[in-house]
Image 1 (spheres, rainbow, N blue to C red):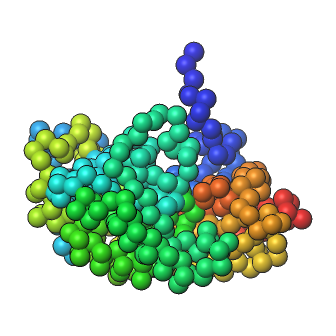
Image 2: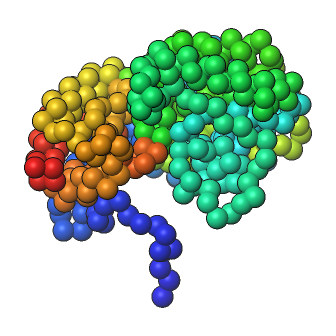
Length: 420
């Protein structure tokens, strides 16, 4: 008898039979309020009728057509449709299956386009688990411990995380000053600009704790990139497609990337990812460096097209902003009743509650206990943060005002049970 790897620990005890919207139903018929969205993937909710219809129709016509062998219409339409929502100047696309693959593709393109070896990443970033992607990841050692040596050519610079730097008395402005000054030091002492292919950064740290960057930080990255001929890569795998209350996370900061990664919410649960760049940059990739058996699967492309239609027709970016404001206000109200809650961070429907101990240090044990108690009460959540100190809220973008209120009621009961 075969079993799943023992390392695949479930965050909740739920064995789901079906889902609808933000609701999941288990084998006993119990309803669970799903505020995990498959780690931010089911952007239009579970089994949105329009996405289901599009996928079912495509399955009956063409399931897969390897896109360097043949071309298919769903891919052509998706490429054209993404052109309507991509940042200006990013008009060339390469598709793959996962966020890790997108990271590897962006890395390869940056090195080939510049002829330079090094990538500067930022403390707390998460970019995947494959060897190169894990080498770029700094949100926790668990993602890369035990299979060294990792890929060389990676240099780490600070991210302006005021929660991390509060121990030094830094506010957000001081944390930004420090991050940019240290980046200049990195370019002076560890990776000369002539050796630096790209800066790779998330608009909002994902696994690192849902910590947003800020406009001055990203302006500083853009200025240094332009000055030295370095490419700026934005990892929008988790922040893209309306998650933060803007279509892209970068829209909060007015930054224009040279390469952008996307995945997760693009196809409501079907596996598809990719990178976007200008045709000028993309054309510098070497022949044979882009491809893959399953990339741009026809059914996934059809689901992505339907997802983009739903996001537009149901005004889900606006809903993410409005419901995010509602959720944040409730989380701050409930958290204010408990000394162990340090605050709420994030943007839109990408929010996290941070827990600290009596000394003000990150408290992963309490965060884990709270997440498990919430699951028992029918509210499905996940943890994140570099010390596992956060509980994160990432419901589908279709979440309603009533469902947010229900989640907040369950959250208040959960904190009372664990912390009081």
